[in-house]
Length: 115
Length: 115
Image 1: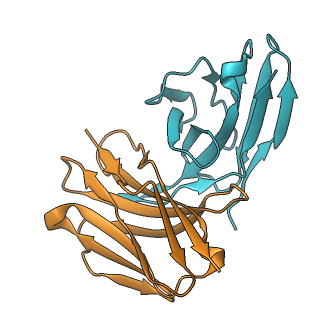
Image 2: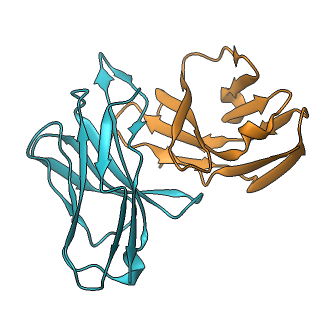
């Protein structure tokens, strides 16, 4: 069982609201990722982090921002939500140990609907 | 640049048929990792297998088998005697050992197994 948790699982909010999607992992992984996915469709990398105080933008441009102040915590924030942000957001983490890339462990996802 | 192509958008089979899901990748690295994930209708991503670029041995796990061929840059996934519970979207992914620690996913193949 992967120990990576996302909250909220479901969120319905109005346009213009600020939201933060939480992601925490208890595995001590340095690498963490946020993917955006419409149901059953392609996963788009929007942010990733190598470790504390490191964040990078992914391949898909996103108006969201992330922070990595603690190893276990990688929250994603939207300052002003719009209907175009409606999607599922998946958080993941992985281990890179002795030169070997591990698999991604995924949270259950946060499904965001912006009205 | 790294890229993963899953040309089959959707496949339908009748229960007990064998089915192969194709995955073709592009990378300039000599060391890289390939993955398969399953995403059932519930939405979570389930890790199936990781393979590194130096290990071309095929792998079998129950009804699942994987065929890795560096010569054709392919990492295909076969389900033998498919079952309705195999219905899901399957994603192939690639991570290069050098550089960015990003995991790039293919667009996924939706498998429908009909009773």
